[in-house]
Image: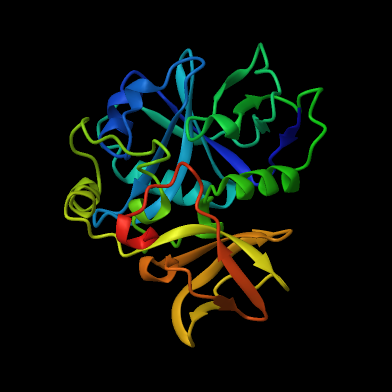
Length: 275
């Protein structure tokens, strides 16, 4: 029952009486769902609907805490601050105050700290924010990374490209990261158009890697033609951005390795892509 400290994750604190309404107009999911014991998965987008950062929103009694990639804390704060205007909110980097943990494989949800099940997949376990490492934290961040790759979960800048990736290419719909009913938010128009007009032409797809792990950005080839590129990976598992037509069973090469798509049960693809 592994529990890991995740040093590559940071925390953005959003406090003040307008904290829910403020975030509600900016992020992809319904912030009203964030409550003690219940986290919300959401993304911050450009006005054109392209990914900037993603986070799990956990609720404390008087504040919302965004579990976000540490390297994207500054960019997230900068974007949020730009839209603060007269909202009664305070924003700060709380990464120095709180340690981010992930638990999975049946690890019990800890008491006495801000914690909630991971809203993306039940198999992803839970997240917890604590002032110090939890006593039972005996796994490593690499163990967590291997686990999320086994589930096919894309993660932050390892797999998404800032101001380029569209949420539905990264599985945000299936992973409960988008609300289709809450109303407007920044980037909502393109996100909705992408879904309802069926404009997704490529996806971030889990792959098995046979051979040396290709570096991120290495082109993926099918019959000599480029059909995508490698993103993150380790220990024979990876994520690649692939055009949907590349999922037709053809052999895929990436550097010196062979890639085999591993379509997880949670991923929904057009029927033509899996025929």
